[in-house]
Each structure stands twice: as structure tokens, then as C-alpha cells.
Image (cartoon, rainbow, N blue to C red):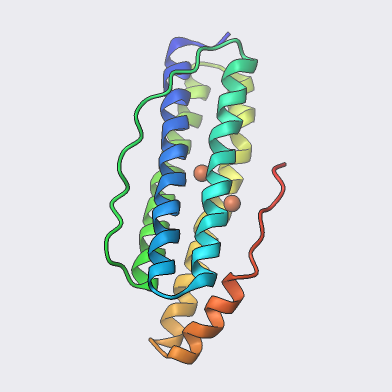
Length: 167
Ligand SMILES: [Fe+2]
Ligand SMILES: [Fe+2]
């Protein structure tokens, strides 16, 4: 059994992860519009990864005999962007998600829910990777400083990202 507080918070996190997926899907469309198929692919892969993050929480709630409550997913605010603004938004968003995971972890500890505390470890490490991935592309984009050749090369590199198997 999950406590009511934990159940409510994990349900909120399922929504956050689905919203993340939605943001990355919007980013994928915007990158395509910018003529950057590699960037578009990277965001599409991230979209799929976020669906897996949501699914992992979903399965956990059911496994603990909790109740899944699906709420409406907010509209992602992605307008006309640049490659840099897309990744800056991605990094800011991931920092927000890291904060969500941290408060969930604090809650699990304060409720002495050891199973949830351990379960969340995976997300703690994942968030380190998510922030580092976005930061790496931001660094590269700053390095090339708007050079079309550089952008072309980064796009080629981001085209290589494939869906990582869920662990
Ligand atoms: Fe996520
Ligand atoms: Fe990841």
C-alpha cells in the first residue's frame, strides 16, 4: 500500500513525465521546421524516453496496489525557437524535474516509505544524465557560435541517437 500523500505525489509525477514527453514532441516538430532533422530525431527519442519514465511510475503505483489518477496534460509552450533556445528550455525543464524528484524523495523519507525511496534512486541518477545531456549540446552550440558548418555537424551527431532500452 502507498500512503495517500505518496500516491498523490507519484500521480502528479506521472503527469510531469507525460508533460515532459509532450514538450519534447513539440521541440521535435520545431527542430524539423528549422530544417534540423538530427535535432528533431534527438527530441523524438527524448519524447519516447519520457513516456518510459511515466510508464515506470505508472507500473510502480499499480505494483504497490495504489490508484492511478490521470489528469489533463498542459499545453507545451514552444514557439518559434532557435537550436540554442530549444536546448536551454530542455535544460531548464530538466532542472525542474530534478527538483520534483528530490521533493518526492524527501517525502518518501519523511513517510518512511523505503520501497519508494529505493525506487526513486533510478530517477535521481537519470536526472544527472538528463541535465548533462542538455548541457553538453548547449556547450557545443555556444562553441560553434552560429556557424552553419558547426550546426550541420551537431545535427549529424544528434541524428545518431537511437532509443535506449529501458532498464
Ligand atoms: Fe523524465
Ligand atoms: Fe535519459
